[in-house]
Amino acid sequence: MVRLVLTCDRTLTSSFRNIPMLDFLGCAPSEKLPHFLYKGLDTQLPCENGILKIAPYSTRKVETSLIKGGFEGLVVAHPDHVERFIDEGTKVVGISAMDPMGLGPVTMMFTVGGTYTSFTKLAFLDLVKKLSDLRERRSLDFKIVIGGPGAWQVLTYENWHSMGIDHVVMGEIDHKAVEVMESIELGDAEKVVAANGFPKAEELQPIQGASYDGLVEIMRGCRRNCRWCDPSNRRVREVPLDTLLAEISVNTKNGVDHISLHSEDFFQYGLEDKKGFTPNTDRVVELLETAMAQPGVRMANPTHGSIAPVVADPSMIRRLSIVGGAGSDHWMGIQMGLETASSELLSKHMSNKSKPFTPDEWPEIVVRGTCILNAHYWFPAFTAIVGLPGETEEDAMESARLIITMEKVLEERLGKRCHFSVTPLAYIPLGSLRGGEPFDIASSLNEGRFLMIYHSWKHLGKYLPEFTRSALNGSPFNRFIFSPFTRIGSRVILNYLRRWGIRQGFDPDRPLDPLDIDVRSDDVRGL
Image 1 (tube, rainbow, N blue to C red):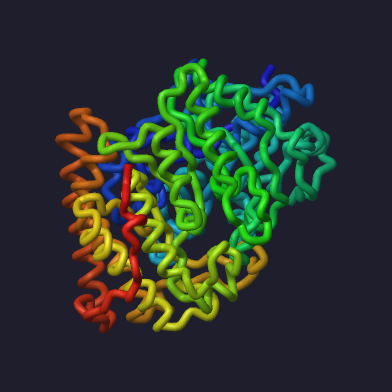
Image 2 (cartoon, rainbow, N blue to C red; image 1 turned 90 degrees about the vertical axis):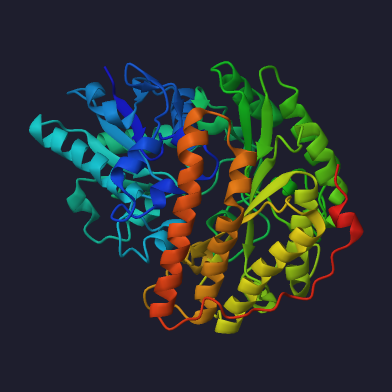
């Protein structure tokens, strides 16, 4: 008997042909991106008899907490096959959600503030409807429960119950997963279950099955306390090394040889200087060495990091590159927050982000840090936030100038090794700013914000051929289909943005002077 079925929408079970950054394809507007093209890129994670062999990490963590707590009768099912596990004995179907209503920062930008419908929203609503219809058709009595990092989005809809959803679980439940599930089974739970408090580091149990992209957690929470960011509201906990190694082992034993070391900021690992944020380089390097030394690991790299520690200790990147095997045929990727060029906005909303430097030094830190990363074969995928509270048109214009400056400096100092991307995100009020007004691109765009978005895409289109040569494997699909598609697609998007901006009265060709930023010789001295 299957008492509990854990699943997610199929955008979270797509490997998108293992192409870097294509995980964001689900954020695209379904009305604009041809469905046949999306389906051609939508390769699904392997499953056996409907059970996922590799699953999203958040789903694995819930599974682990339940199993370790003695909960019996659960499966982690592929969303396409979820109905085969549901019968009269099923009490709960839990859906782990990332972007269920298309309200994430990337999605809100791509869908013009929700004017269009993202593939993530389509997939989530299709899954919920399928389960709700199944329950009604078979007269079953299981509860549909939503959890995960995107669960908050469901609660923004007053009529979320009408979708067939019974409960929404908010917060980390590692330490009380069994308690939560049993209360839902018994009918004792509130409609919105708030898992107050945070599990201790020793309560973060190792996952029981392989995770997508070999994701393993090294740390939760973040000390930088950016006001708009949810992880900044969480207590910082470093995952015990035994737990980390066990998670790497379960992945490699299931054929996953690329390990992603997940945290909000890789360079905070082992941090001792909690006031100044000077990185503990030896601990950071030792962590990557440990991961790379595990049997079956071919590659390991961090998921997220801050740019300031790179400038604070450039030797850290050099040492990490040697350990990770970085070079012209293997670039190490990392997601980073550029966010804004405005020192005033930085001071107001994210005063710790520039440490151990000052907010006034932020543009220089971003440019110098990108030079250091590129010189050592690291590809930073930056995010930039459009519409932060208090942002002026000049602030946004400065961010556009910063992107131009980064490209100019790297071209002059490193030539073709100009590898970075900037993804503009619509401001979404989360963290301590939750409850405020999100940025509405349809009504709140000015020329500065337009140019910030435009130059982000212009840079991507200019260097996409070089990006794809560095990042993609040599499969026939990538060589003959995806590579040409990305080049053509980026031109189409850029031309669309250009025409759209002109219709709004903006000038895409408005000359913008680069910022006056000094790059030192050490910043471009690579391996």
